[in-house]
Structure formats: structure tokens, C-alpha cells
Amino acid sequence: MRIMKTGLSAAVCAALLATSVTASAVEPEDAIHYRQSALGVMGWHFGPIADMAKGDIEYDGDEFARRAQNVANLASMPWEGFVDGSYEDGGHGVDTDALAKIADNPDDFEQKQQDLIDESQKLATVAKDKDFQSSRAQLSKVGKTCKNCHDDYRAE
Amino acid sequence: MRIMKTGLSAAVCAALLATSVTASAVEPEDAIHYRQSALGVMGWHFGPIADMAKGDIEYDGDEFARRAQNVANLASMPWEGFVDGSYEDGGHGVDTDALAKIADNPDDFEQKQQDLIDESQKLATVAKDKDFQSSRAQLSKVGKTCKNCHDDYRAE
Image (cartoon, rainbow over all chains, first blue to last red; front, side):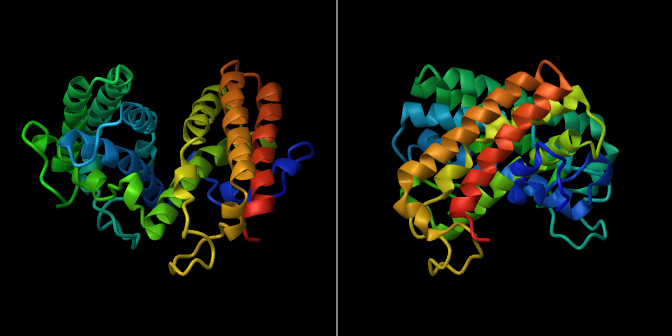
């Protein structure tokens, strides 16, 4: 960990800086770990609201809205972890299901990211009304954006 | 993975549901993985803006604001991963630096979470003005909330 300049040194946050990276120096293994973490955190919040939608657990409007907002807040984050050299069989030695064809289809991959971002923002808005049926319907649209991307760019 | 009911089945999102949990059934290892992921994602975004504050990389007002907003959006998320039975030496077999004394000081731990949430929200707001000095000063306050919590509740 580098020493921060006067005035910020007291603010040094070891755990955070331990994963410090700059855009110009992203190692494939760090990028993979980052994106898997971001998608995993999204899954942590998506899971219970999907369970509510399925009827596996009781619908809780406040909890659904809170987790939907978290999914929306996370939806823009994973993508900067999909960098050159970080895909499946990329020689980095890290397990990843991200197919190398992502690099060949940047516009389509970006559109699929945007679909998730847009639909999850709508979900966060809809969920605030705490109506089960409309929340459930919009959750389905979010899930479809996940599936659309996985179908094309994720190893089976 | 369970089968979703009609209408949502097409929306099944394997990667997300793979980490699906409910509040009533959180395993310590899942909670640890979740909170470490959430804190790691926060670190990914905090790192470059700390580097800008230190002068190690060039200040970019748009990039600083974007990452500061991500930190603010993440600040409320890690804490639900700090559950009973998930602390250091808790018998779960997972490496974690989270001290067991967290469980004995819930009010103080919660206040320290709130300090991060509040200061990072302020940072996201301040950063929008794209003024380096004020952004740097508020980043220092965010970093202090990290340190305050780590000093008490994180293994050295």
C-alpha cells in the first residue's frame, strides 16, 4: 500500500486500497474477480425478489423495493471488468464463463448491458408502488435481459 | 435451481439465481462471500479516486464523480452479510478478518456503517461539482469512516 499525501493519510483504508486499480493497469485476474463479485452481489439481491415473484417466499413490498433498487444501482457496474485478455481460455488461468466472442461484438454486448440497466431502473421505480403483480411483471423483463446476454456470451 | 412459475420461467437467470439466498437461510460462507464481494467492488471504485486524490493519477472530474456515486450506491450493501456465525474463528472454515466483537456491539457497528453511508453520499454530491479540492477533502472523510470501523472490528 502506498503512503497517501498529507491530509489524506489518516483516511487510508487498507481493505479498499488493497483492490485499488487504475484503468490503465487492470490485470485480467483482477478484472475477472471484480466482475464476478459485482454480478454475485447483484445475484444476492436478485435472488430473494425472484423467490418472491415465484411465490417461494412471502412478498414483502419494502424488501422487494430495497433489493430492486440495489439491483438497479449495481446494473451499470460489472461491465468495466470485461477487458481484453480476461475471457474464457485467455491464458490468465482464472475460471471464467465469459466467452471470447464478447470482444468481437462490443456494440451488441453494450446494448445488452444497457437493456439490463434500463429494465432494472424501471423495476426499481415500479417496485416503489409495492404492487406485487406489476413488480413481478417487471422483474420478468429484467430476468430476460440477463438471459439474453447469457445465451450469447456465457459458457453453458 | 428451482423451476420458476409460468410467466417468469423464461426470465430465469442462472448466474444470478445461483447465489440466491433468503434472509432466513443465509449460510455463513455465503454471507462472507457476499460481504467480501460487496466491499471488494467498493474498493475497485474507491481505489482510482483515492489515487486521484493522492495525485498518483490525473484527476478526471467525470470519472471521479462516476466512481464516487458507485461507492455511495454500494455503501449500504455489505452489512447484511455480517450475520451470526460468520465472524473470525466462527468454525465456518472461511478466511475472514471480521472480528467476533461485531456481534457484541451492534449499535456501534451500525453507527459506523451509517457514517460511511452518510459521508459517501456527501462525496457523490460534492463530486458532481467536479472541484478537485472539495472532492479530495470529502474523500478523506469517507476514508476515515472506513478506518474507524476497521480499527475496531477488523483483524490486523
